[in-house]
Image (cartoon, rainbow, N blue to C red; front, top):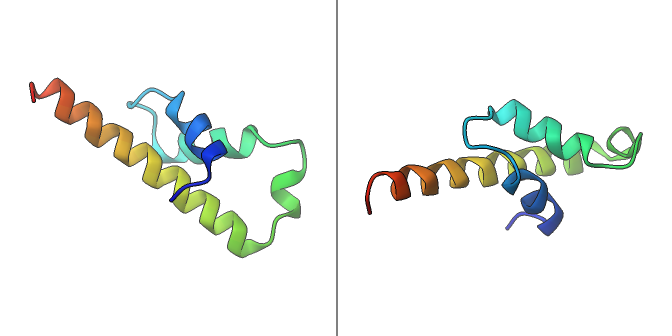
Length: 68
């Protein structure tokens, strides 16, 4: 399960945004310099979480717009 702050940031993006934009939004939502102070494993997890949340949002959008 993604960190609530990651979800909050990514949920604000339009579904047409790229996965890279989702990761950049999470990184940009942090205090300046905080990303660079995180260990590699934490950065990787936040990256995976951002992409997963964004792809889930796209899937939900496609489902809703598909008339379901």
